[in-house]
Length: 359
Image (cartoon, rainbow, N blue to C red; front, side):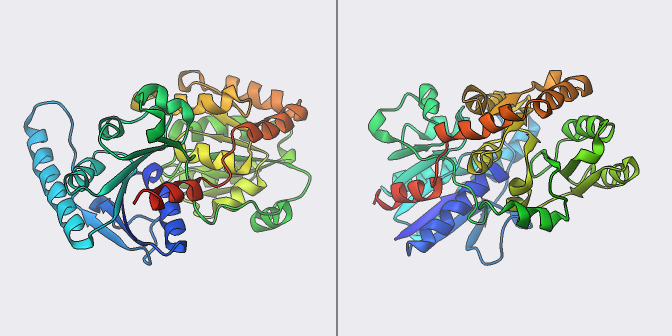
């Protein structure tokens, strides 16, 4: 069976596509991934993966001179997509969101090739809202997403959001040894996603570097490139045990060592928290149509996480929330246990079954 995957340029689109790609290969499928060429030096892509690049473009709905070039490169990208369809001759095409998927799924529909889309977020993006009407199957990370799509139930599959194959929970000792951490301390993971988050970085540092019992804490801080050098130097001067990374590909170690995670609420992050049953303080990115706030509410409603709105995120608020959790370890245990109500054990397998049974 030949399966073509097409995604946008962000890690939130690419990570679940890579997880599905691995699972489909295990089933003997021939898989091609199509990506915008802005990703051809992306750190999360391995050389062994079979990838075809199409033209990147910036396109919005406003009129203006800048959008003329956007339309031109959109048409080039659509032509690239047509060539990929004709040359690869897929049996199924699956899209993971963004405008990059629209033209290619249109060609698949035109050639009567089976199609499926996967929506990672609670609030569906514009591309998937449009495509949901035309594709054969719609796979969702969260059941509540269909409140916005209003698709017939028989067209919907709730699969969860696939995470990378290597993201498996390790023993605490193995994770502690990896970071050269000491047993018996409270470990906090701070991450703003693959690009980092400046406000999350600075507020977290200000609170934790001044913590009264800092000798009881150990931190893993994934900062992104912008703040990396300053944070690394500042943590060392503050005398707190912290491993700082600009980019960290081996997240299984970070998640396995963490007692608490402070992070944004992108779809991939939410899926990874579910995989590791991790109590979290979620600071949703305030833009992009409130996608992250809707994602975060899934965990908050289930008792797995607490939300601090970005506009409320400050040193006083973060210090109070962390202090409250450290004084009530039973609540942290309850937050871990609450994941049993929403955890999807094998999202990649469920999505692969939908793809393989579609033809």
